[in-house]
Length: 220
Image (cartoon, rainbow, N blue to C red; front, side):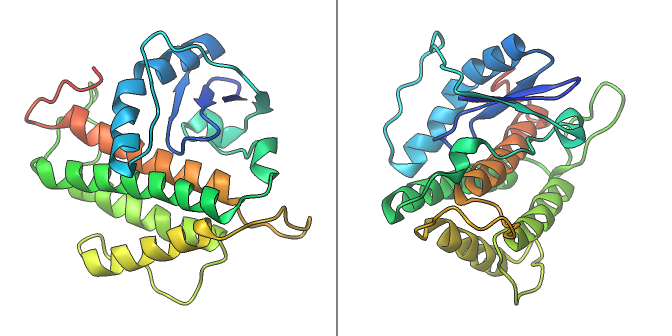
């Protein structure tokens, strides 16, 4: 577990479980949020066929504290941990990619299971379902470039085949054995990439579930 500490927001993130990241105004609140979402994250490991026992009273060991930045305070984890520079074997890369694929599966199910119009926030804000799907795919196209993936156009969220092809390329890159790069390499380490991309997919999947006009109470 590590904490990414901004001025107004703190993210608590599980180093080895891509997408299990939650935030709060303080370190304590971020860790509480992480524990509260354990049951929802268990659906990711189940989908990936991985074994992770999560209980509401789980204890976390904070391995590292990172200085956040403006993106942290805006609402997204943005800093790679020191542990992300450790070598990644093919076996570990495949495991990371399986968690990422599971996060996408949960997002795709959320998109397909709810009406197009979502409940608005208390001030009338928030994207509807299709706008969220568009946003996620556009972000993933940008993330692919952080993995040195080029040579293809940004797919439409409504083109399932093209989205799958892009995601397959992302997972293929994350699955490769990896050694710490040179200082000139600005690409994302695979552990950080899997965590950041899975967090984004799950954050919006859970948003869709919670804002569904059908009134899902998951996580509320």
